[in-house]
Image 1: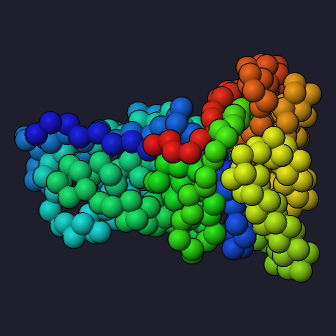
Image 2: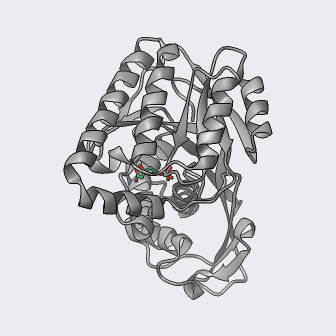
Length: 317
Ligand code: PMV
């Protein structure tokens, strides 16, 4: 049997992180420059049913059954087998690699789950539809951060820019005028669960105030959708500034992220904001035509450990 390989991209949230957990709309897009990949090979000499996993990026080499039940890789494999109604797997090796930084707001966990679900189902000759692949990734996210909105698994599975509202059908964004973002990594790893948990605590203490902020962020996402779909991405700058200010207010920015935002604006970015869970991880800056490289350099000079220049466009699988 030839090796089967499947992959999934990273993602950025352009508008609406955190508020999306409380049912406000958000906008996200895939980042094709970084990917998670699963390669499956049959092991004709292996014990029937034995699945060996290798994930060199996190120093993991183990039999599936020896991992804790809630380990994300084990959870993703088992959720996939359950959906396929398969109880017996031919002995195989699964190698997982990823160029998506972990705990950085770029969706690495969801991308690994999507690559695994796609790879395993293809390996067993029963490729799963996107809807189920996305549901598997959601299940795994739930184990680790309790109340995921579902935006990560959705955008990573469908591989196109989306306008997302929790629990509602996916809406693909029309992008008549592609636009460019520079992603800057603060170098600080920050698990989403911590930021989401902190926000939940503060929301519980001041529901009215937080609902008002989330509502305002939702309005920003709606205005951003209109600007994108009308082919006026240059109008997104002000909306990004307003969104970042609200994220600061709910306590998920950091000195490093704020420093990178200022550096990007000083280098000519039309707008900049943190991206994803916050407290660390990445920020994004909207670049004018041809201005991406200068902003990337400024971000590196200001301490970004990595920069990626990416384009948001209509369809990008
Ligand atoms: O995985 P991250 O760090 O990009 O964060 C996901 C976005 C949040 O809104 C903070 C959480 C969620 O479930 O939507």
